[in-house]
Picture 1 (cartoon, one colour):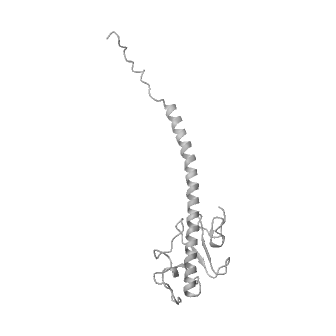
Picture 2 (spheres, one colour):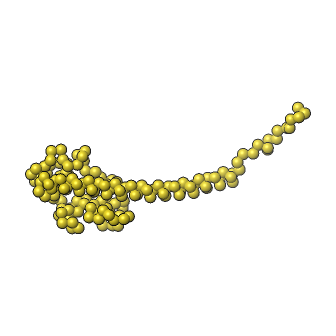
Picture 3 (cartoon, one colour):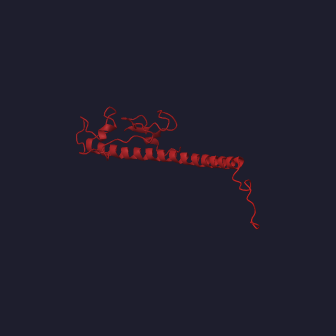
Length: 149
């Protein structure tokens, strides 16, 4: 064993606690930066989905009007697009919304419908948005779909 060095227990060093803490802090900072960017994109996607739903429902309302001569009343609501209301003269068999179900907005709430409308003479159709409170800045409205958020 003349040519071999004696192995010292302290020669095999791993990471120190400070080195591990620095790596954890860096990972935390990166996760925060990426997380906030992803959350912002999720909000954008939810807004786009609500606008798309409103456009789809508006098209179904237009078809309903063509068949029946008027839009559903507020009392009949959007449900008139999937279930024949009593006053419908020429209701389309199968309804006006694919899947026979009115979609909920991306935040899990029902879309609001008012006919005749306050902002539009035919009807108002809107989502209360992320805060689920009607009349706030994050509402997505059929009469204002070009609004920037």
